Length: 351
Image (cartoon, rainbow, N blue to C red):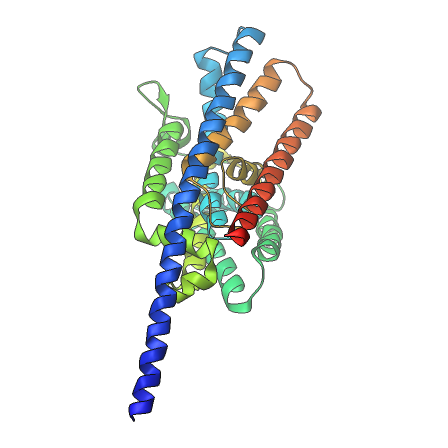
């Protein structure tokens, strides 16, 4: 019995030492990443300011409220999806289905409204369906062991197919939506579009949660080192499912806002949105390998993409070149992320 107790005590001591070492590594990594976040965000702010100064000389229409209002509107609704994507990237996942899920939320909400349901209840159901899609993706990843990339690719096709099936491929006109509901996408408060206010409220809310909430700190730990997070007692599978579900819910919210803004539901809407969303998050510092990223950085990434698009339009650059330039920006961002992670792994190996 004494020998058994000694073995148990030795095992417990080893586990405690391992947890202590894991915690120290996490704290050290966290402080290093905070420095990287600040540097990345400061760099993005500098790039945005440089482009703004250059465009103020290049076009007389750039420094106008109408132009800035249009830029804010162009990425505010999509920015809601960027928030969810950033959190999912931090945990080590990725979602290629967000564009299709946004479209599905529009279609479900619009169809239920046309069937006689009030728009608020219809929208709530649509958002919950989108959240359930995210939940199913998380289950496929954690229970079956599939990769987020493959699962989200499959659900991208499924969600788009459901949108086409429900609408039979034809757009739904929702001109009879009540003004109180249209206010979500079309209303103003003191001259500021409600969409922009909603977007910044969500950004502040989730940015504070990521920085100070315990459950969202577990998101970073899971994404940076899943095994170490498991040794620390974190239920990593639940965290992944939570992040995937949250991304689906926010995509649903964006779809409802789009429905209110345009007063229609088009089954082809959102094609290619996932690329813009992922680009914004990666430009803002979210790593495709997980464990890093901030909401504020992702918003700056979205703002940079919107600024580039607006500048190209004002400079009369053909739309085909705009796609090429946005693709090059994504390539540069991913390459920088890869080089940064390689340098970080090299520094860790030396230490």
